Length: 402
Image 1: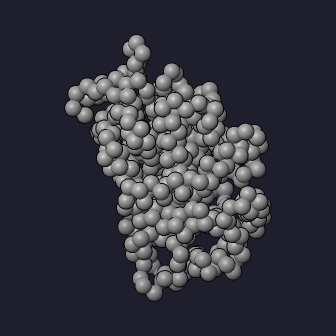
Image 2: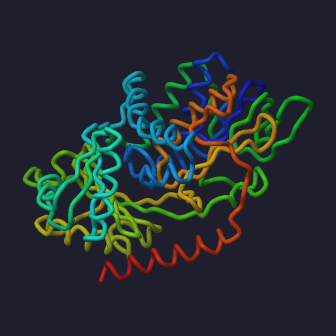
């Protein structure tokens, strides 16, 4: 950032939320300035699992119960259309992010998990959505393993390279006229008359509106914001490309996540690497250490025919989990907005909420949002719970690597 800036909208965070906000605002003729402390996609966006899922963790009935008869159906519809919105942006702006549109599969890790999937299927089917219930034999065909008791194939969904999508959003936003500055850390927010002043380590940004798009990477820029969620980690490892004779493994390239309490995910990327992950941090270096042993053990369980597996990369990112597993939109002060608490659904949620931020700034009635704006409410136990979860996740790696 070269000196002080004045703009309509200042956006803190260069991930899915901040960049989609910048894109949608710029397309409306608003001047915008994105401030990213590290590099584009540094946080949860670039470290995402890559599953472009519809909806949220809850089944539709639970969403309706939590949000009521007005917001519930609207939320379900909007988030059910989330993958289509992402895919439309990818097509419109020709974003190169290894996109697949063959769906994702919620896999039953146990008979109890399959019962839950049967109930979810009945709800989605009642709503007329293209979701198929898969038997254990169907899962063998779709995944190449007999490890699952069934699954739920959502044809609305797909996969992407999340960092590719993030960089593509940045390129599209910049092309629409947005200003994007990396390596610039926002250090303080203050009001000056009717304007906001964002102080940074490289100058100031004066803006009519400020959007904080920091989600799980929120710091002390706004009091208590990082205390409205419980932060957990999710780690992933990527193998070297598979041999050609392993084409039976995830042949349709659907991304998979399971029904276990400590979630597990796996997908096959455009370079025929298997990307496998679970909750927790990477323990040890690539090629050795606890996480490496865990991943080798899981792949041997799923696909013993692979034999010895080598890994190229390992990483982990942060997820903001809310007590009810639903995201939030806060108006922290006049013209100061933040969407937060994505519960591991950052690709669609960040994109949807980026459009919502632009709509609100352009004059939309907040009552038209997919969920109500609420008062900031902290989770006092969040720091303790984060540590407890991390201990449990590390123990899970230990147990499953034996």
